Length: 132
View 1 (cartoon, one colour):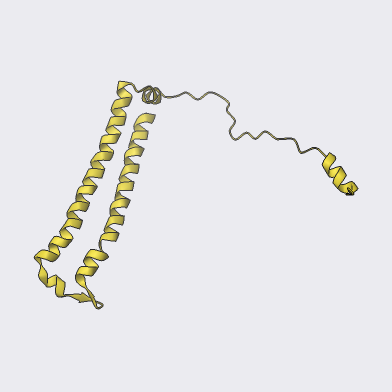
View 2 (spheres, one colour; view 1 turned 135 degrees about the vertical axis):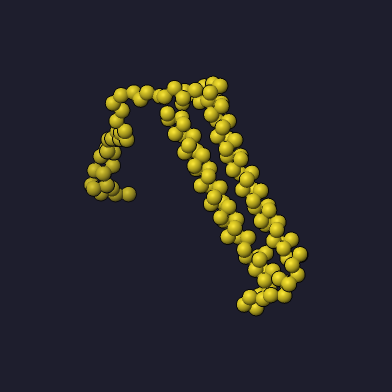
């Protein structure tokens, strides 16, 4: 096999030197607030703060779960106790099909949106409390 001079010269070239990339220039050491240290060390104050966050999150989750159970459980009960609804049709589709097959989905999306917003609010309040 004959090697051309351009290939031979390319093989003899060294790869380019690596460059050091610095993303952040640290000019001084950052002081860590005492609260963050207490959270990491699992002191009594840190445990109380984390426990408060967990309780707030749990309270919100249980409240929204309860609302979901009541609303979604009321839909079949409504159809059972009010039989006149079963005779109504919208766009040639029986109303119970719309009530049970379509309406729960926007409601579930709304519950998910509210749960996410509340969880973010609790975490934001916790972060503000820690940063004080």
